[in-house]
Length: 368
Image (cartoon, rainbow, N blue to C red):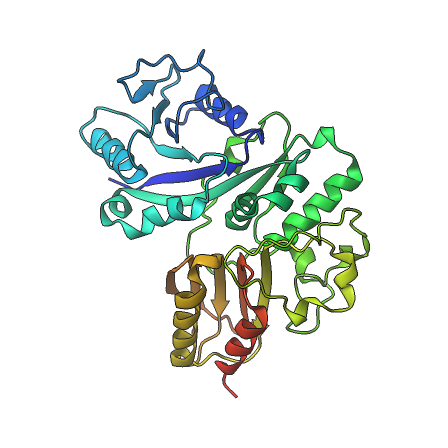
């Protein structure tokens, strides 16, 4: 039996997850989807859609979809669904997991890699994050969970954009891009998202494509400060978020590399930040493995998503690596083509990662 693709849907309360789920569960789109809800409550799918008695965890929909609530942990629920599918008791092709509004999607994602039984039945496809344009600035300022949801995303949908002015929307999009330059952003209305933009995004595939928003890499001739040096930085964000100083894990570091000429355009000092490392010299495999192993060991809980396509000494093929928190995997990709510029490109998205230490360490792993 082929692996069942799974999508994690995350976003703060009111961001439109329910609207999107309703669409997924009731539209005649031809997909048979199992939706796993973190809990039944007023924020979840409306009662007119779900008629459930208290004992039944799984509700069948008229269009072939099913919906189930998590009464125990996610692992047990996934295992139960896979077993019912194998026995022919349930018919579904994919799973959508809705996390609670304040959840960190990291542990949910890790379930798919750490548990052999789950990994043999399911394939994690992508983390989709909904952002409410009207309340996002406040939520991102006040709640590190909202920032984490953005940092983890493979795809960001911005809802309620019609409730804010163009300038605020532009500022929000820039802010999200700084936090996560690898997730495409799309403004959506009332959960009207084409199904193909939610499913089969292959966010966790180890492939040789590293999607980083091209604007993010513009105007950049050096290997530092990527995450501020793009052409849009002449927009002065008119909201000042600089004075909130949450010290989430005790060592909020103020990196010198952030205090450069463009700094005054970037008022909000979000805990979740991203940066890109590029190099045109090959990595020494043993040195890089040791360094990344040490970094993941120390900073793993603060590393949300990271990915790279690398030029390694000793192989003619690209090396692809990616990770979620402490879980890191790598694989050999396609061969470098004749005449193709050999460069390594990595993106790190995390909470207060010591960018200077990472940059220095990575540079020391390059061939001299």
